[in-house]
Length: 304
Image (cartoon, rainbow, N blue to C red; front, side):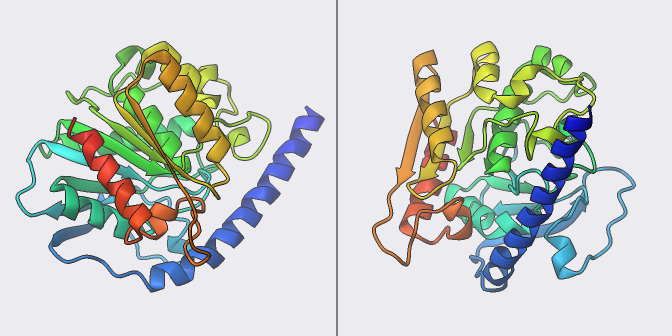
């Protein structure tokens, strides 16, 4: 146990270093984003009853565990169909604002409403707590009339969008993962992880924070195992040639293909020094041709 304590301390130092680097990258990006016209934006809607919404400082907002969501509604959107957009950040960092520009572009081009959600970050909760937040958001949105949830997310949000897709379509899996109370009559017709993080170690950052009480099944550390057991809706996997998750995505694609899952794989190639296909490039730059293609593939997947 003493050795595990050392692993947790190392993981926590890695967590703090990761957050510091992310803030340095994301702050200038967010300050220079330009949002598209033609999309109605409802911001900071609590999806948990009694959630106390206070406006944090800018740096604090980049690591927000407030359980709130935005809704981006394009013209002539369908009343029952929605994209559930889940931000990344290694499960320990991030907020919905990181994905706002991408989500608004997705809503405008698809004609489908987008819900962009916050959730509690690790290690203030565990993975079961994170998933309970996601499913509380789904319950809240289902009461607004949405019944078809296309999941999409980047990096850690890619993990969450994939596992959410599986959980939405399987009561048995929800029971195994401690989500038995979920009762909304909804389904997930498609899932589209962007530069997704699908494999984690229970002894390293960030997987070490997933399940400290060992109450969840082992497939939470490898979502390929979860798909093997429960199947998967039509899937688009997006990565880039400079993505640190490239090998993970390539591995998952081959595994899904072997299982007979309907899956499309897009690995964007760097053709210009000023436009590197780095981790979550489509979220940071939805206006790039590669970001546009990611959105197009996501829409095609949702409209199969």
